[in-house]
Length: 196
Ligand code: ITT
Image (cartoon, rainbow, N blue to C red; front, side, top):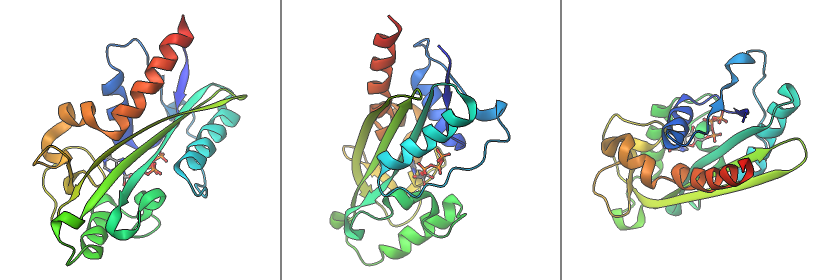
């Protein structure tokens, strides 16, 4: 089964491959298509942006593909940064710049009101039909980064039921309980049935 994974985010690629390891399902990266241009993510939902990425890669390669759009929704910020998570501080912001802005925007908000959720939406597109697989995980945003594993906002996010951040818990725990792991489990089930 040849499916292209339509993402340039190395953190995502690593996690997706780790969750799929041992299943026999393997996605090919975009490495073979260095001329693939960045996709403009101007949709207003995770679903729309996931579809835009999958369609652009399908149009370029002609091969079935899977994309993912994800982000962090913070309740005290009315759901921000949401679909703007990767460019929260500025258009080409680094993870640490985004973390800095989030800490700043939540200054003075008490722990019990710092609730948030990570959301992941995968889109599988074969040129005719798009299918979506979603997952989310709730937790709290702390006021200074802790831990070095993972990527993005992981050093600030403490998932419900734990006292450590995703960046402290490490990939073994994160890849069992994360928004991405949950979304992939639906995708995996679908692909396994599809193969039979
Ligand atoms: P692609 O579009 O190429 O897939 P991207 O990084 O631009 O890569 P998104 O538009 O989906 O991907 O943005 C997702 C952002 O949400 C990501 O850059 C992080 O800032 C944040 N995010 C998503 N999942 C996360 C996770 O598991 N841990 C920490 N931060 C996460």
